[in-house]
Amino acid sequence: MQAALADQFDKADAELADAKTELENGKQELQSGHETLREEMGKAEGEIYSGKAQLDAADAAISAALEQADEQLPELKSQSKKMDQLIATLDQLEAAQAAFDEQIAAIEAREDLTQEQKDAAIEQITSSVEYHQVQIALDQIDDSLDEMGLNRQTIRTTASALEESVSGLESAMEYLEETQDGLSDGKITLEDAIAQMNEKKAGAEWEIYSALVQILVGETSLDSAQQQLDDARLEAEKNDLGDTLTMDMVSSF
Image 1 (spheres, rainbow, N blue to C red):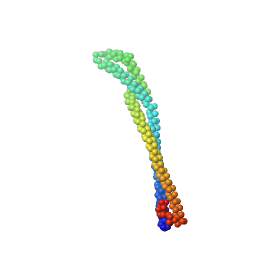
Image 2: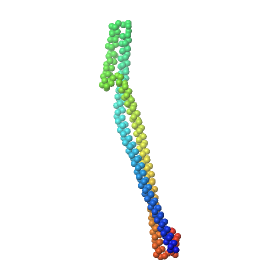
Image 3: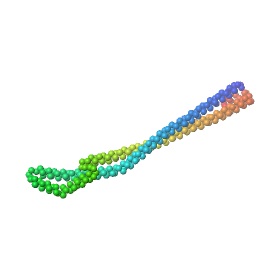
């Protein structure tokens, strides 16, 4: 009976040792998993914040570009309007000049008039107030164009290019504003991702800590069982409890 009890005690010791080993392995795995979780979450968090920093930088660049465009656009529009008005005036004056030229050409083409009569008729036209007003206005426009480095031909191409610049700048501003709205949506999405990641991180860590607590409780229980088993073995060896200590009692420890 004594040998059987000793064998039972040894088996119980072995089972407790195996249980402790399993708990220790489980604890190491949880600790390793916790470290891996922290590393992966750290990487993900770093990528998210890096993306947010890039969006913030792009947002700032767009804001600077929009601010510059807001300053330039009114001036471009003003220049374009003035140039359109100048072209409209030039068109009216050139039309009036063309009408005078047609009248002079018609007089010169008449065969029923002598040259003296033709010159008199032309003189009447060129000496009129209206004719002189047109000439003075055209001279003034030519002077203004010369100061701008333009002439009657190049002003039209310049005005067209300026109008395209205004239209292009307005389109660019619209695109930048839409892009900025998209960046704002992207930043909101990243902020949501950060919040969700923190929630998942907290939940995963809580599960790991809960499992570790359970393992610690299990280790405490095993230590208590080991102490009881050691006490029972010592008591059995001291008092020869072969008649009173059964295998079932040993197994219960």
